[in-house]
Image (cartoon, rainbow, N blue to C red):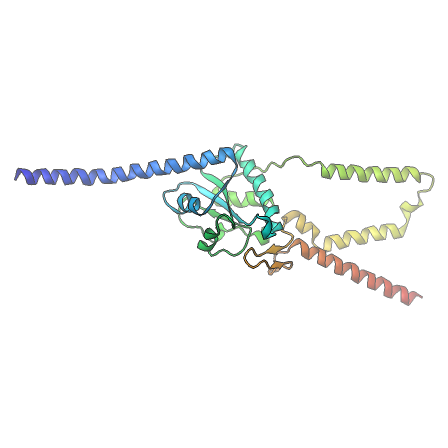
Length: 285
């Protein structure tokens, strides 16, 4: 009887201790994963993941942090110009998060390159790059956790809005100083000023209707071709499938466009205007 009582007590203690030990191991594992992610982030804002790291840190529980991952193909042999442009904006976003008050271990930024983690692409049935996906702290990614690159473009500001919507982490994008714009504006103003000074005794060209008509026509063609939309949305120039290598210059959706489309529309508009002008000139003669 005494031995039976000891066995019952031993089993009761064991059953009570097992969940506690399991919870402790879970917390220890989670702490190690967060520490590892923080260590990598301290060296580089965007963590590079391969198949093994992706499965261990993203797919395997436990995880109490969200991870924004850019799936890309940056190797030269892939010839993905869009990937390079998107990577530049992604780096700006990640660095803005790292060196701001928004920095937290609730979220991390990472990337998976096709040549370093092709097994991850296969695991997720992914056949295009670049692609941005948010892996939330709880549950699997939903449809809204995949960034609509073709609609929103890959500008860091647009990515930051999407990140805030999915994770409640608001990042103020801080871009490195770019002096190209002010320099070009200064050169343009200097050219106009020099031209006006050289012809200061004959400024009739400023009142020339042909000059103003040509300027207005150029402005209209640029606006109607979609250049302003490109400036606001920051879409890619074209899209290249990393698996097939096929390049698409025309977007399949009516709600988005590539930069190449605006150039095509602009070219056709110029040709059309030239044809109209030539026809009008023949009728005049």
